[in-house]
Length: 394
Ligand SMILES: *Cc1c(COP(=O)(O)O)cnc(C)c1O
Image 1 (cartoon, helix red, strand yellow):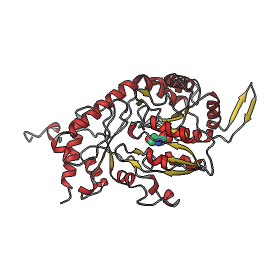
Image 2 (cartoon, protein in one colour):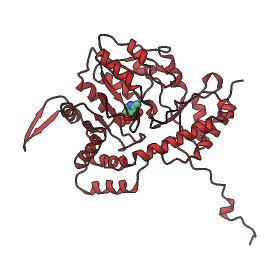
Image 3 (cartoon, rainbow, N blue to C red):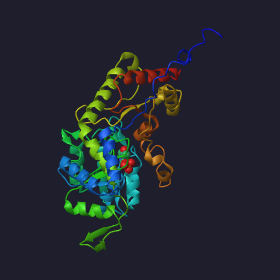
Image 4 (cartoon, rainbow, N blue to C red):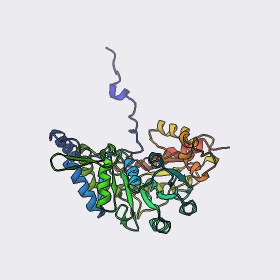
């Protein structure tokens, strides 16, 4: 018998560090048990869990809130309630998830993009003001990565020009403006509970409304326009759609809300760690564009850097692939919308919004989620720095 055969353990390669995705949801065991209870209850579509979830959200914001199956239909419904339609213009940013502008098309209106402020990466409100015409009916600002758009200037502009505001706050649940929760003031406020968002229902969203009349209309648009009365009364007032949230999803949301403060605190801690790491001399020289360092109001939905295109010999996709090989996930949020085929066919072209285009080509979302450890951050920054130095332009 041969002696000294290596044991399988000794022969196995050293386990690599586990893959670090750019995000992942945090769902506790009580929530998982709660979902199982809903499944056993005999009522799995919209019912008591949705009612309870809406009650919790309305309490939080002190305004009427209704839940839906996405944070896209919420914006479409807000535009419909505002009476926005064919012939109307709606001002928004080209650097956002394409849902933001698709809903404008969906109601038959025309999106009017204005360029971003490269520091915040969000709608430039000076440009928004200059873009207002006699046809402008609404503005949809987006709190990219959770950083709140300046609400004082936004609401002053809307008031001065008589515009409705649909805040695309899909990414800013838990953010504040000068200490006041986003959602607790303003006009329409739309949140998403997509799996990647700070609070999730797997898929879902909610809309904060101004009064009970708007809330009743939102309920009609949510489910085929139907209004019920008595045991058998049914009327249809508007051509509504199919946008209701299920009780299964709402139960997840009810299990998430109590963790909001803790999730936000952990996200801020990870974001701070990125700033501390990236402030080191060796990393400052990389020329990365950093986010606004807001630790008062921002919920740190994402930590996004902008790669220094002019100094790099490769494109972003190569950087992403090499990060992946180093066990690190990354994401792109987002390419500039006006350069998508659908929007090019409507007349937009390269060069229309240079700041959004530069960000769209070079922005990169690094890992940040509550289950991450602070010690993961140096590993991400080290890998990114190595890749950027390897591909530095001569
Ligand atoms: C996630 C998101 C949406 C859409 O939310 P869904 O729930 O996926 O429909 C809209 N706008 C922004 C900025 C988002 O991040």
